[in-house]
Length: 65
Length: 233
Length: 226
Image (tube, rainbow over all chains, first blue to last red; front, side, top):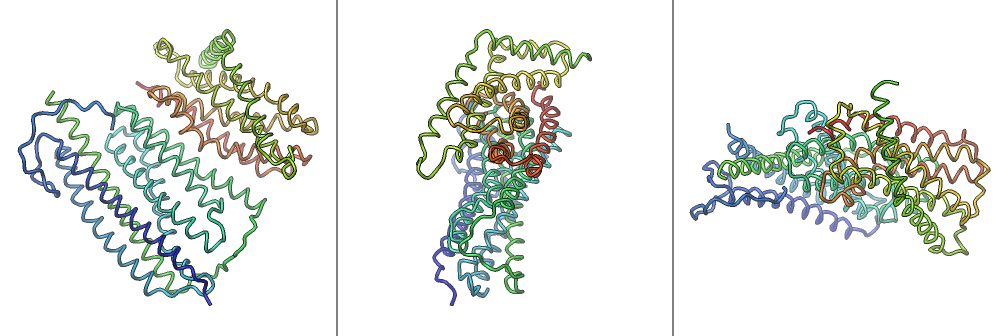
């Protein structure tokens, strides 16, 4: 009779899904953020560019990456 | 092709590859949870194996790639190699996190303890810390040349360190075997289970590639932005 | 003496001379040693854990602190008044700077260890004379590992704004093999086991020393490049 430990299995599979999907989403969001801050919107972008006109040139970002 | 165009193109390809891998992951979940038999002695928790082991594999792959690219970068000095190494490191951190969270969740029901200080888990723990140090170091260095060179030094040192950590724990374990409360038998994997494991390893490999492409594209696009800002000012 | 060796020697002497004048890090090293040894002694249940059980760990934690202190200092003195740039303007080969720094750091960390060891014997009442020579050998081997990696990493850390945070963050994973080896060997030696029994750990630390001293010397040039 196998032991009753399915709860652990569920927890692990849920955590893996959360981390994998979470990381994928974080990548997409960061890519979108970079696009939004550039001056020349790219027409070949796979992610939707903001529809408003690009703002005035941004000051040089001093933060290290 | 400009930096921007290359970044966009790799982001597109990376998105497709990642999406494919995510679909594959759904397939792995279904196969592992529904269609693979439950192991009689260990119960359902044994199935954690099908996500824990492939994440360890992906983490190892990421780490070796970062190390090798670091060597290549110091030789060729191409900034794109540095960006690729950094991409692999961040993705490696994600997989290390998966490995370090599923490890204890697997360990508790199977081995009777949350953490076993075995060679693989311990090496991954320190690899996790090395990845964190690598990424933090990159965060505090602003000059791209210095950042590339210093990251490469850490990448190469880490490549040599991890086998030593593995050896340290192995030496400790052979001289001081840990008392184990539940000792699962280790028969060779029956066909069904092996197939599920191999499928999962394959999917995680594709997932690694997709993630690295996206992260690399992010690096290229950030460089492109820096250039555009520098030109404009 | 070749020019590289001569340059390294002079850099080592300079560092040691600077520290000798102020002795600040020696003082803090002493304070740390007493603190760590005392806290670890008092933090156990004396009825179940004998002092000889925790002694090796206590000793090596003290040595690790000593190494951190020494390494942090070594490059901070260069950062003051940009002294490192001065050295770089001379035709000193970078590898000479590494060996010079390495030797100075080794001397410095070794001195703090030499101060901590009698305190250790005093507080923990360990039979250190049983295998004193072998113990010194083990301490030397592990310290070489700490200092080689630490010299390289502190050269990197000092270029960031957060040197005091970056050095431990980067260095600690690299201390694991020599530290574990050091503790294990110290424990066995204090139990009276002969060195021939402990060849596994000795080979581990020796291999680590060879690999990482070589790597650190080779990669140091990369860190100094402008």
